[in-house]
Picture: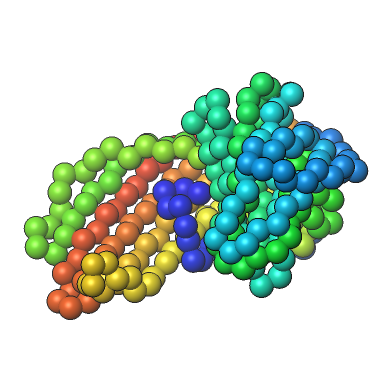
Length: 300
């Protein structure tokens, strides 16, 4: 999502900005203006008949996988706009979902535990997208909903807002190790987008995989917060055991526009990863710090 592509922990909180500003307590609603219509299509069924079986907007793609197998679908966008891909698979299986734009360098995937996955993308008219459903473990039938965003298709709860975070930043990274020390800093630049569900009324943020994270405060004009990933595990490479740790902290803060359809944000990201050899304690580490800007758009 940010510098890291995987994480074992995500904690997100929103804190009120500004000394002395009136703050809405957690659990109270704030009016938000959304930009998308809540369409709720009735999906027609299409069955997989071989790799690159065509699937269209408003269809439910059906297939069946054995363990370690995959099936590919081909979607051609007839108009530009947001598209949701919602995979529902069998219990006790672990299915994954990926999409690749064959006319650009865009690609994305969802590899959560279990067989249910969700992706949201902004499709471009005339572009072809290859959608891959794969089995990491387990087997069985699946359904893949291909449709415009809707509360029903996404399984959104009451008072949730589908929100798009877009941000970019620039800073430096410094590598170091236990036998040399620190090297000269290098430039770190990045940009990303991520979709989240925000529920101001009940005081939580929910990721697309369904995990809820507590919200602290927000006022009528501004919001601020921190999204943090961290991981700590033992890994083995070429017979050598290492302790691998990382922490990725993304801070944002800024003001809503007049009708609260979006918020302009200032951002900062602070990141480190470290690998320590278990046999003698030797380590290597990277520390990064960058600042930038972005926005949060309330879509649905």
